[in-house]
Length: 261
Image (tube, rainbow, N blue to C red; front, top):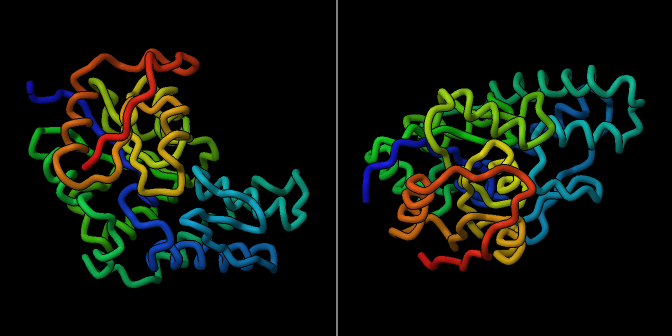
């Protein structure tokens, strides 16, 4: 296969990091504390079948800013105050996560199988790598240090202010220079639609809470069971070698099969 000329953006939670892993639970408990810092109350985040919830709100595909905004609305914060208080909570989250230990590799067990191998293989093919994550920048970089992936992933699009995943992907494209074709690797329907909104292809992985049929129905260009083995690498390289996505609202020619690892 001809060496690719494009870049690859990775979602984190559910794609590279196990849903409900200790690292993710620290992230969410720290966010709950930051919410309580600002509005005086917070509920616990909870996991059901790998899916994250806050007070009955399904948070699949939410950014950190979007999660905080929804939580503050739940707690009765007036609409006129939501932008300011959301920023305050995000600042408190960054400050609190900055006090957490960040020694390299201590949370490597929280990674999903195959992710480091895939990242290293893509770097070996000359692909620029970045993040497309709803995590705040400080949280994402803390997770990369904790899992030992900071040498592979540093820049990208983050969820500090953006509530729309389309904006997160667009920021990731800009952070990597925006040149050439690109692929987003993610585990939710919002990853798929956000990739297409930026003209990128999407490799969907079923390691999150979204079933493969839903990922395919959202328009995923390929679906893999996980990131182990050669299947995920081959799928990314094939998507990079193909044409860019024509944009949102264009249905796929057919639903892709789930490719076994």
